[in-house]
Length: 132
Length: 132
DNA sequence: CTTGACCCTCACATTTGTGTGATGGTTTGA
DNA sequence: TCAAACCATCACACAAATGTGAGGGTCAAG
Image 1 (cartoon, each protein chain N blue to C red):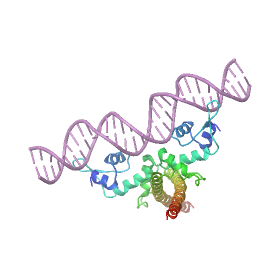
Image 2: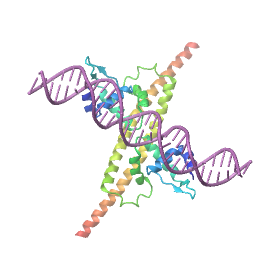
Image 3: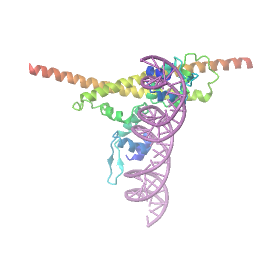
Image 4: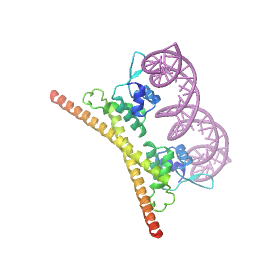
């Protein structure tokens, strides 16, 4: 597919698809006329990239961890240098931290919303009772 | 406490503490000489702010959700405008999305690490066996 | 063959969170 | 009293992700 379709299906500006390619996050084949030609799997990949970016990971790190996230992970062992493993462990820990932080705060928001909504409900009931 | 102590205890450059204040995320009293004077609770608050920033939330949003995260949430009901509630629900959902994305990817990294480490272990055993 | 809808590259701009340093006031201890 | 270690404001700089648009090809439909 061409960049327009990938853009639509991932809800991502073309500009950013080119940017991700420049950063080495995705790869595009080229049609004879120079147009980018994307394989189907890039749809999921781009969505994944955007999710990670939105969760605070910079492209530099995403680039490093992406290769480990594909199914046939049994294949590449040679590229697992000690530094790479250290990086992965570190990023895994940072992600766990983020998850804890987000969870804690989301639950607080949820609790707040519950309280407020419940209060609204009570207020509505009281008003109905008064009106009738 | 003054800015230096808060900086040390939160592991945050002074520059950023001033920035967070400028963005309305924290408030500082002023000593007669103009020095910022922070209350104790700002330590936790700053740590929380940094966590959220690291998880991809911009200061604008953090500012909006912070007021809902303090214990005496029973107090403020009046400030719960419908738009505010909508914002909170929206951000809560976005945070859940981030959590799912991070969890999925962290688990994938973990699985990869397990595979690689196990393989290393096996290789080490084989070599030992061969050597002896 | 032209028009409209694609695509390309290049380049400059903006926002956000940070880094860094200049310039200068306050406080504390030798 | 003077130096060191704080603090203040201000301002310029920077990286990363993203916006925007100019200038110019390609291609299919009318």
